[in-house]
Length: 98
Image (tube, rainbow, N blue to C red; front, side, top):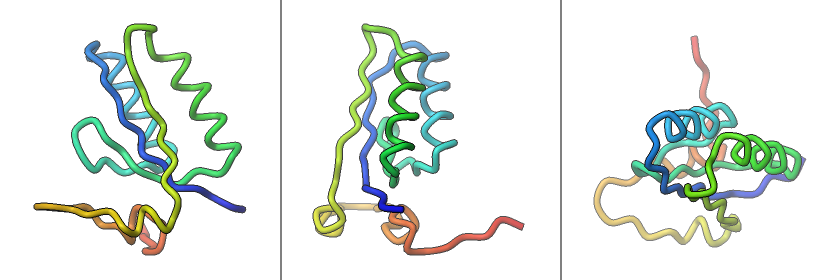
């Protein structure tokens, strides 16, 4: 199944909505890379499901951006300071929870 990399960026002022958005992104496998920025890979069906879930929980005054980042482009991200684990985010590193 082909998956694409996405950044999810949000500007949500309501605490309850923001918490629900964060949990929704984590549940689908996204990793937080900044306070309001997540990154992860999605199949086309997962993307559709995520969009529907986010539409249900966000108000019209809130913003959530889902930005496609091709694998080549994602590999060229320049990080200044403390970065994130690119292998984990791109599913190149398998993790096991015991």
